[in-house]
Length: 275
Image (cartoon, rainbow, N blue to C red; front, side, top):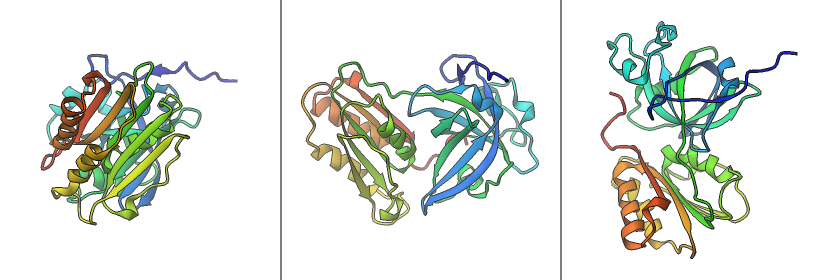
């Protein structure tokens, strides 16, 4: 029988490592909620792909127009692609892999739907089987230190795929508290969680999520949270200013070791990545 190649960790060119491009195509397009679409990608290259952790970030490349081929991009780094002329440059955005099944050669990406609709979101909405794509991957930051007894996981809609994967992770601490801000109650997803995990959903008031309340509920929830004693770990991803405010509260007001608080501004209000 044919023995598949030994999986190798997929470098991305974001941390100084050589970049590797994984060509894929769309296998399925599934609407999970009115606010979330899952695109399943398939490709032989995914048999060799190995992620770094449950919050595996990738650089997803999507054709800018239906006739655009991605074949000429092999050998280029993400930086070189950004320098291409507009007509040749693919749409490139950072996403988190929701899951990866090397035996099936498949990976899933969940897209949070928002307004106004950007080119990546529109691509996900229109994605049909056979449509080409590619990605550089992956980098993960989820890394609770040894001896961590509890963790706090905080994020908004954009972080939900990573949060879901973290809550499923067998390496998660015994006690987990998660706070998730979503557009409204219809955006709540069923999650697979381990014993000792509590999830608090924070639906916003049905708006687009562009108002001030987008982060207010998260900030308020963390400020009011009763955290366990002993060494903990925080994984936090949200709008840039929101993530910064919550981290400042945890480090400067709660006295948490800054090395135990991972935070990331997944997006910045009023700005689109790569444009």
